[in-house]
Length: 235
Length: 235
DNA sequence: AGTGGCTAGATAGTGGCAGTATCTTCGAGG
DNA sequence: CCTCGAAGATACTGCCACTATCTAGCCACT
Image (cartoon, rainbow over all chains, first blue to last red; front, top):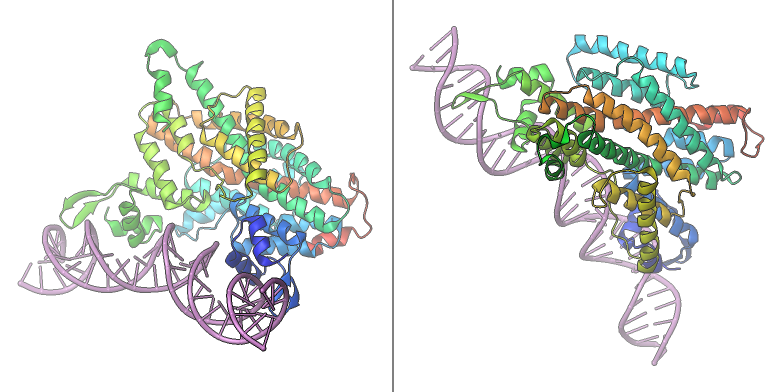
């Protein structure tokens, strides 16, 4: 198909398709002449994936390129999952703030906490893993806010994270054979279900909030507008 | 303290502090003269929170303002949690793509799926909740990629989300009395532990990937070149 | 053969965001 | 009393993700 058709089927403007190509997010069409190229189903799929990663996954163009590069280079089924996992951006930007003395102290505390957690969970991950570093940075940030996790809380979350990861891997592994297809599936499971999970968590939180407000913690008929207040304030 | 001191203690440039003020993210200092204002500990705390929300939470300035406004307006402990919950941005940007016929079909399917899930989980949430809408949008996106959750999978995640939300609420509710303090804690728990949770999930995924590759639980069909490939490719 | 409508590729322009810098005015404190 | 710094307003910058324009060329239909 021609680029205009590709654009129509995917809803992505021609100019954007060209832009993605320039940024190395997708291959060029097969040129049939100096000014004409043929695009196929794989381009449609790729565009969908790009769109999903940027809008749903919130990835930047650069991050998307890294991920897609990892997908394309996946040569064995085994390496595909790991490569994708490491290509995904870590959702923590390091803040290069001063306050040096406090920093040194809480920083190493966070590091030790992470190390202890990984040991407790019997997780296999090198201390150079971006996830380990990211987690350390995040805990450090929270410490600066005096919002640390209490002992054991982090482990409780970690236990749940483990359960989630099991579900994730089962979902990802369902595409056993072709490395690239597997990698693509991994991208979807790893990157794109993060927002779904977060939304589920938010929904569950909302439910919990309503229950606690409506019920046990508060004497409802203490004042009539309690219920209304929630809906009103919530705006 | 003077603005220059506030800047030094927090590591935030004076110009940025002024900018945040203009954007309505923090109150002005108490003016002691036409060209001098006094800042206090609450400004330090607020700046820390702003920094955490933007860097760790990844919120935009506008989103941060919404959240902080909700925090400041929390008048009752009950409304605080709900208000914060609704003020947080939903991690899905709606993509206004064409492909109308397919859209209509998958769109309503997603809607029904979400409704069924909420019913199954016995969750209390109006269909107008941003979380419900966000989840619907996210599932719609995934459907467009042909990456739906299989029946039951979503419920399994939802069950785990419920457990997580329980932990969250326990953490948030620890600050029982002052509405604003409670709201602030809620911000931290709701918005800032999302990246922590995501990182834990990534770590657990990494562990799972290594374990499955290493051999023992290869329910994926075995592929020959295993061990070394992981560490090598993962770069 | 001619012409209208695409196309590729290159380059330049746009709009939003998050700051950052500058400029003016003016009070505080040595 | 005079210099330093602060307040507030406004302008500027850099980055990002597109989007538009421009040139040159080919395809297909008449």
